[in-house]
Every structure is written in C-alpha cells, then in structure tokens.
Length: 533
Image (cartoon, rainbow, N blue to C red):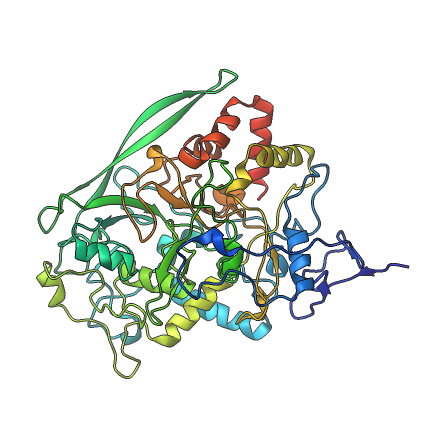
C-alpha cells in the first residue's frame, strides 16, 4: 500500500520526491511516482561561453535530476492548482496577513537565532545615514552626493518604487548615466568584462539630486509624458503613456552628448535569496541566443565579473541582470544611492567624479576602529542576510475558476516563454532555508529584446539598449496593497498590468498581440491570475 509522506516547516523538514517543501494538509505526494529523465544543457547551446561556467548541475544525483525535471515541467492541467503552488516561495513562504507589511516578513523557515540576525539587518536597512563628521560615527559617511539616506526610503516597505510626480523628488526612481565604448581600447575592456559601460565624465554613473550641506546636487530628473491610444481586438481602448526623460538644473555643467539616460524604478525585495540559489545551469539551459527553435524568443545571459574574486559569472539581479549576487547589488546601491563605501565598492565619496572637485574635498565616514569602509563587513553581512530572507507571500485565490482560466491564457499566449514558472534551488546552499526549494518566480532571469518602445539605448555589460532581464512576477498582485500604487516596468510608465503587457515589443510582441486580440473575458482572467501571484 502506498502511503502519503507528510512534511514540516521551519527547521523540521522532510524530503518529498527529493524536494524540501512546507507542511500543508491540502497537498500530499505519493512515493513511487513515475519520473522523467533529467535533461542538462548541451555544450553547443552556449557557443563562446567563458570557461568554468557550469552547464550542468553537480549538486544533484541522477534521481534528483529526474525529480527536478518532473516537478518543474510546465503543467497542461488548468482545472485545479498544482501541488505546492500555494507556497510560491517554497518552505520560506510567508502565510502572514495580506497588508502593507506583506513584503517585509522573514522567511518562514529560518531559525529563531536567524530571525534576530534578520531584525538587525532590517534595522540597518532602515537606518538613515548622516554626513561626516558626526557624533554618530557608525552612521556617518552619507554622500556627499546621494539619492536617499536609507535603503528603505527607496525600497518602500521592501516593495516597488514609483516615478516622481509633479513637485516631488525622485526618491524611489533614479537615472543611470552611461555611454557605450567609443574606441578599440574601451571595446576591449567591455569584451573582457572589466566594465559594464562608461560613466558620464562629470556626473558619473548616476544622477544624484541631493547633497550634504555646503554642496549642491547634480540636477533633477524631468519626465514629460505623451499618450497613445491602443485599440484592442474587441474595440476596447487603452491609453498608454510614453515618457520622455531629461535633466534640468544641472549643477556642474553639461552632460556628455554621448551619455544616455536610463530610468530605474526600485524593484521589490522579496525572494532574492531564493533567486540567488537557482543553479546557473538551469538558467543557462533556457538561453537560446541564436533562436535555434525559431520561436522568436532568444533569451541570453548577462555575464559579469565579480568585484572581489574577479571571476566571470552569471548576472541575475537588477533590471539588466548586471549584478551576480545580492551582496554586490547591495554594495552598488550603497555607493550609488547613498554614497557609502563598502569592501566590495570602496568609494568613500560615492559617485563623485574628478570633475566634482568640491565633493572630493569633503570628509568621509571611514572609522579605522570599525574597518576600512563606511559600511564594513559586519554591516554588509547583516544587510545581505536581511535581503536574502525577505519572504515571498503565499498565493491567493489560486483555486478560483477565473484565476485558473487566466493561468491557462498566460501559458497558451506564450508568456511562459520568458516568464518561466518554476525552479528548484540548489542543494548545499550557504543557508539551509534556501536549499532544494521548489519556487515559482515566473522569470527566466535572462535578457530579452523588448523592442524600441521600451528601449533606453544604454548598454550594460552584455545587455543592449533594448534588452531587459525578465522580472520575476511573484508578489506582483500585492503591489497596490504594499505600496499604495500600481506602477510597473522599469520606469513605472505602466499604471496597470494591462498597460504593462501592451508595452511588450520585440521578443514579447507575439504574446502581447495574442493578449490584445483576445476576448475581454480572457484578458480579464489573465489579469486575475497575475493578481493572485
């Protein structure tokens, strides 16, 4: 007689079909299930990949590989939810109430001691840094040029930012400043992954509108919107707003004419630790840069060089997948957004350039007794742990007929060609909370050409001016609940999920056109599915 395997949450875990999953009496799985053979990435799929980049998972036995392949295979049954679909963040999924704090909960499977570490990291994430010199020596070093004083001020409630409105600052959205290579030497630096691109010679890599006392900010982002009507297949009309970006009140002269402006909205913080533990081989297996299957989808990875080790690895964080790890992403944000140096990015004056001489004469916040950076290793450890363990909230209404119908539309319209539903994280992760978890981020974490409509014209590593990383969709239905607004895409131009879909071009054009041509009831159902994530 076959018997069901029960399972537990937090530190009490059991393996079910080779996967660590949370206790829930609604879902059970039987031993002896028929499993498919695992498929790993073949060598020809990634021509020219750097040596050492993994093409198969070494953390799995053949049996594990078969289980992973079986459980991550896209479903064809839309009559009921899939097993474990409720817990889209694996065992760490938050089952707390749906409210403004839905993105601020710790992973449900970390230990009691780790919860204390999480809370310390949260305190640092919320801490307002101050300018130097200051009596609060562990908190000084702000700027001198900066966009905000605390991480939480940009990542509002650990969620999504919003574009600035008339008369307000750009707290949770900023402008990246960069140009492409202009000569053979610079092209060689990009080819060797030494740089992602080249900053503006005066204003650096990011426009910073705020400054410490005695110094002026660099300028202010200006957005001018125009509207375009889109008529759908059933005659419904949707207004899309198209932004145009410029900079006003420049404080230190003109921008280089080659400098491009790329607006970046702060993304939600949930599930980052799980994304970090997806096997590189599983992401690379989805890449098809030459579109060998002729489906019009040619996702490719952004390969980057790690700051400390110098190794070439897979980028997976940021709008253009330009950061390989949460720690590096945090260090880049400390330097660019707040002007705080770290061991990873030891820029004590943040993004100040040699042309901003007054900025470089101001004191910094390095305290020798605390370390050689304004945010020394213990600070980075805590902020990184916090960022790795913000829980993904549980799904809602996933068994409702309209949501199931919308899921079917999402699959059949081709959305999962980029928004890959499921992964199983690696074994042997630094934190057991992220080990061997079935997760549902709905992203392939690859770069895709999204067409001229969304292009920013800015190269970032391997990413061209029209390529963007597929953003994960988990938690997207709680945007309004957590942040009190609904702005989507990299610059918040889309005010609804429908608008966000209709902005898809390039590799997303076919799926976008299927959505636009669908019956109103099918479009509504697809949106209901997204709102349940």
